[in-house]
Amino acid sequence: MSLRNFNKQSQIAASSSVVFDWHGMPGVLERLSPPWQSLEVIDRGEGVKEGSRVQLCARNGVFSFRWESLYRNVRPGEGFEEIQVSGPFRRWEHRHRFIGTEAGTSTLRDEIDYEFPANPFSESLLALPVGRKLDALFDHRHLISADDIVAFAKRRESGAAPLKILVTGASGLVGSALLPLLSSQGHQVLRAVRRPLLPGGLGEEVRWRPESAADEISGPERDAFEELDAVIHLAGENIASGRWTPHRKEQLRESRIGVTRRLCELLSSLDSPPRSFLCASAVGYYPTDRDEELDESVSPSDGFLGDLCREWEAACEKLAGGQTRVVNMRIGVVLTPAGGALKKMLTPFRLGLGGRLGNGEQSFSWISIEDLVQAILWLLAQDELSGPVNLTAPSPVSNREFTDTLGAVLNRPTLLPVPAGLLRMIFGEMANDLLLTGARVIPARLIETDFPFRHPDLENALGQLLPHRTT
Image (cartoon, rainbow, N blue to C red; front, side, top):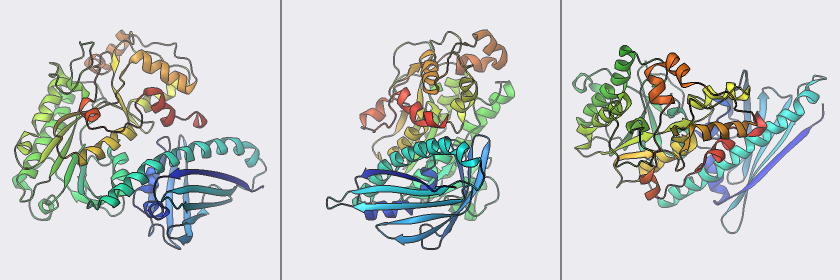
């Protein structure tokens, strides 16, 4: 087997010491993992320290593998090496080099030497796809690194203290992407969980009984909610996981309105309530029978989704009337291959079986998972901003435009529309509210605060979420 090499470098607007320090933050391993690849950190070891080991389990489609690596030649401010102890390669040596300049910037350089397993067919079969995957992986890593390291440096220079943040729904689609960002930026993250507490994972776990009233929570369980800088409330049943039967509608209402009301009552009863409360809501708040762009000033729709979102936001009123800044995050359709709507679409579209829904003219207000978690982090720092804030991309599209763009990114035809009648037969009322209608929602308040969108247009977003070299 021949030794192969891979190199990638980019310029970072931060010193080499800052680049090194950021690489040692909790959550960086997850931040550097692309959204098309599931990564579980089994054991973080002691971080980037000489002789420390890290154990990972990576999944890409139907394939998964475990990986253990060793840190060696750790040189603060200069770099370190990762050596595969066990994993899919015969040999893997990854040198992280951080080269400072007199201007206070640095070059981030990744150098990898690797060999395939000692199999007569492995090199001929794997060389091309592995090379493509490395290109896509490190393109992603360097994009994330450039933004995250600069933000990390600015926070350090400002002298701002880390925030103590509790997150509900931390294991969900959004929470699992948000926690690594918060942790890697130096914040102290607490995860509210309903099960018995377990060690490991990002952040400390806090026991939470969302079915219990505020006066039923006492002792250490109550104390864990004291003196928080912020609570980010993402918990709630999946709105699209089944037909909206009367029983299912009640489950959705309870998981959003009831749980939020009890959480706000608990937080408002504390001796030291949180300074900020960021609560999930959705663009389902808005009416779908209007062609114009809709900002946060528009009144809600009269349907099930509009009523649900309106009452969900109203459940925060007890907390909003006190010392806590409350933000209602009206989130659009979250795009990530890790889950949600996009993941469900990928298989039929990759098979050439994708197509518009109904006539395809309905609006589709979306946001990439990266812009969403960055926007939530941004909102934590916007002390003057409260009330509803739309978390969507600034360029909503029609379902037809989305279909055509996804097909183009995947290089697949989109010639098989799904009839509206079939969708109504399968999904019932949910088809009308979620699939066949939509609102053109604009993130006016985010734009007013100069939030820097990473993915302002759909083609750019899908191109980074679904790079060609991984398909």
